[in-house]
Length: 374
Image 1 (cartoon, rainbow, N blue to C red):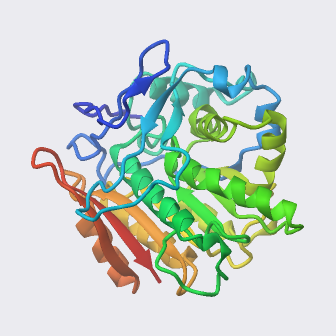
Image 2: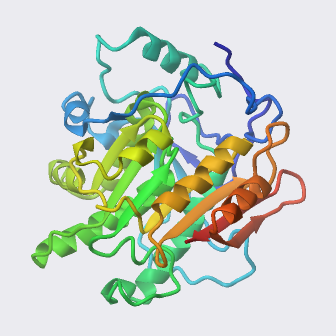
């Protein structure tokens, strides 16, 4: 079983403050390098689907979230566009992410030895273990691009009071329907899940407001990653860090179980089971398996993963109203993925694409943010 380490790590300017004992404040943006595994690498089968039981993990939590080691990522406006964006109505301007050394949940002593081995290798700066680990312990650069755009959309929604609109009325806002009562969001290959955490912060507020009005139909955010230990070690900790800042932790945790789910394993297996009531999430999932908002950052790094991303969007976007937001590098050199591969795969399924943002500093790989509709 081979492993891969990309050749360089580049800092991202908007992660400016660190609360980590080990000063882990960098973000990796190197998925375009040629030693990423190619589509021809053999794999030892697909990762089986598994549901992450939040009750089990929360019962083993070490201390309160705000006592953990974390770094803070500052959100920015207007990145990748020349437009003037008004954001004064937003009360938060940053996201927190756990440091790799923290591991705030006790692992099961009886867990499979192979999973433990993969987790250990991943923690030791191994970026990819083909068919075993897909880079979920790193914060990839395009995920920050996606966070910045989501932040703009949420602020626009608040300034225009779009929460009050009937969801049957189409508006030019990419998150409004997903964050209304009964809305559904999923983040594919979430890893640190910062885009999903940003949406979840708003979903939790909608849930509280809906509950006070006697409406239990809250927005739901589903997080998916290839590896269960990624969901345990970084996804769930980041969720807790970003939603327990000001409120009673126990109250938030009880609310959380109704608005989110975490599923590990192969995407296509999840795709085939989304309408299966035996999936067992504590939150409700869309009966038809289609979502109002699908988020994906750097999931298009090979030609096959670009095709899988497009197929997932085709199978699970709500027809007409659903929005997919895909953040990707324009090229992933040597492995065949990127914007062109994703665009071609999307067009073959009849998906409608709009290039929302282009990030080009003249020095590094160009990054794109695509809106996808069905």
